[in-house]
Image: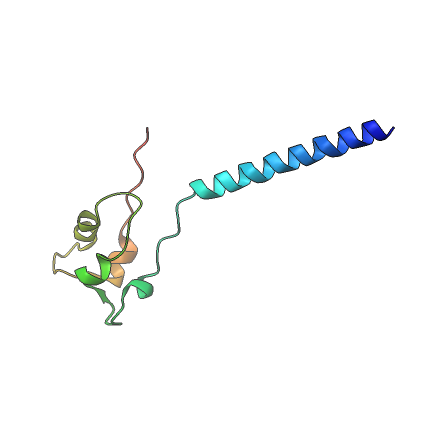
Length: 94
């Protein structure tokens, strides 16, 4: 009886451990949430200048290309509206 109980406990522990590892791996694959506009707007003028935006790292795409694509009116800054309307680049499928 003790061997069966010990085996059941071991199997349960192994299954739970593999489930936890799988959940952690899945969480690591999720993209990080996009930063809030206000956290990037360091001078609080409700515009992102290149020097404010260029300090971040992006998971996909060139920082310069992304900034230029967000700046739809080509005035050299990104407004909160331009930032909100921009669709972040996605990882290219393998």
